[in-house]
Image (spheres, rainbow, N blue to C red):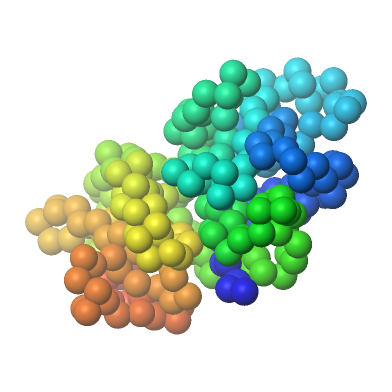
Length: 254
């Protein structure tokens, strides 16, 4: 079976928590749809599965939202993903309503579960038992730690905020920021079309004549600058090597 790369440590923790919960539920083969009640931290994306008795403090925490993880065997409803998050009335839940960090974690959690579900072909089992059987099939990638540790990484800042930060800086100054919704949708489409799971960032650079240039970069086993033409993509083993190829990016913003 193929190993699925995970970029967020919290995603891996969510999957371990899910396995712990699933193992405690009775395996009812006749049940074609399952709803697992979950508590999602709207800031971190941490997912906890509600047990019979839940800490009262958890339920009163304003950062915690009660939702459901809806699961069905792929053969049951072909047009839907096997795993998705829904509201208490079973309606679709907009993940954009979460904090950006939490949205990334929850989307990745669902993504890796659904990728593994595509290998499921035994309708007499539950898809969640199959997907979670061997956690070694989920590989935690720490490639992005090189980015997160650099002083140039500024997190979830907007294009406008990035320009303000670079306004009085020298030509060649650059910062690294999280993807905006538009760029994140491009990354998501790239993931779906290529059946991969990659993490992306934006490099914002101050060039000559106060011009601001931006580059969408992602890690798919190696670092690349996004380019529509796959024949002209160059991959680098480290983020430091990639940065050296970005025009004018010579001074990391501290």
